[in-house]
Image 1 (cartoon, rainbow, N blue to C red):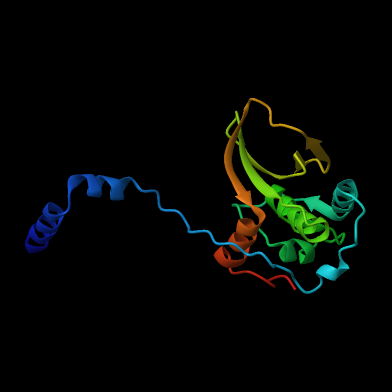
Image 2: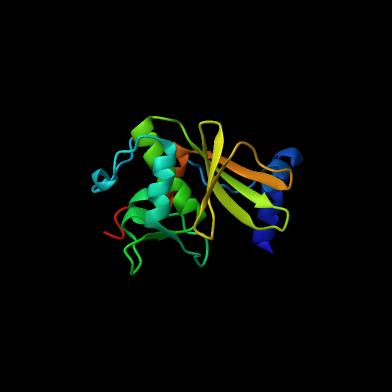
Length: 178
C-alpha cells in the first residue's frame, strides 16, 4: 500500500500530457550508421562491370533459403555461410544486404533497403538504387522493376549505413561463420 501511495504522488507531480506522451511512445532501437564496413575475404568477390553482372553472379552463387525467425546476416555472414553445394545461403534481406554491400563498395552508389508488405500480410525485402528495385525471388530468380505495385505497403526504408549498423551491432555477429 505504501508503494502505491508513493507512485500516486509521483504521478500527480507529472502533467497528464507528459504521462500520456510517455506511454504512447514506441520502444525502438536507436539505429546508428556505419560508413566504412568491410570484411576480411571480401576481396574474393569479383570486380563487376555493371549491376546486371552483380545480379547474375549472386544468382549463380546464392541459394534462397527460408529461415526460422528474421535474422539479418551481415554481408560477411552471407558470403561465408554456404550449403553443401558451396552456395551462399540466406533469404530476401540477406540477398539485398549483400547486394547493397557490393554496389556501395564497387560502384560508390547509395542504396537503401525497402521492407515491404504485400496485401496478404507477408513481408519482403528488396534493395533500391539507380532508381530501380532489385529483388531476389524465392524461386531463385531476380527481378528489376521501376516502381512498386499498388498492393504493396512500404513498411521501412533503411539506408545502407543503417542496415550495416543493425546487422553488426544489433546482432553482434561479425565473423560468426568464418
